[in-house]
Length: 463
Ligand code: G6P
Image (cartoon, rainbow, N blue to C red):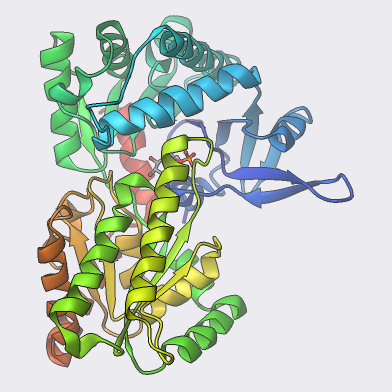
């Protein structure tokens, strides 16, 4: 069910609901855009008649953009083309390479970041791309529309929209965690001030969890020197109908049979993640190895299936991280495998039905990010799992504030404690597992995607 909005709705995000590819015969092929933002927003606004303004990311996207507005799934997508060098600097250098790192606290601060003149030129690109998005909204938004601006790529739209289109009501929703004042002070002074001022120029700013809203408010007071705009907290959610449809698909059934052959009657730990520094894949595998060392009864009797998919490969940090993760998996498998048993099944194929097959079959779902705005896998898993599986959830994820009442918590930095909680989940008796699974499922399905978008709409139009 899509959201009902009292006025016309405009969504603005870097990655849009559709991505394009050029087929071998030169024709344009449309696919659904990937990632958490799109999978949360797509079902909620489909059918609402909303206009969705998104960046043209690839050459194929740029070709599609040249054809004008594209209609799909009940919304109109307007793909915005900017200069490719500006786009790269805005996306790779500033958005993924700096803002993502600041909000997730990923810097190895002895070495990075280095805000030099090259970086400042990239910040100018970020400003230009934000100005281009603002211009597109100014030109396209129907009178009195509600504008929902999404995420850290687009922090600077508020002031331009207020100046040029005072009829619009723009709110900003941040999908990531928000860094505290000490984190934001890492950015060059003038950048931190412009960024926070840009966010505060919206009618309201929304966050996935109370911690992130509080951090933004503290940053405004301490770094900007004035109170924030109104804030609201509204966690994104999964559409149960969408994920159930994938779970019931033939592709998913085939993957379940495949997995049954590989796993047999062993216990199964599953993770589903982008290959992403904040997702903490390394400590997850180290905790699993610790389990094999300390609890020899599990050797040969448990499999860890990791369904992961490559991400942001334009960044050296991500390529290096992937190599480190794959090297560790190889080393653990070489150390512990037997002719009958492979301890870690590592699959980087980016195959959603296969990931959902893993979610149907898990006995334990490991969600251990070092920091995460929300984490949708923590909701997707309980909605489709068929084995009274146990959810292990990082206390540093935004989802913890919603799901922590029922999930087993973990400190993502503590490998020993993660190994202990893996063991605890694996030995839970059937009755306890059933109660646990019922409780996490109820929390995961307690809100619909339309509720989440309705909260953003309400924040834009206070009574
Ligand atoms: C994840 C995050 C979002 C972010 C998106 C960007 O889904 O949860 O906060 O907007 O990644 O991913 P991208 O692949 O576009 O860099």
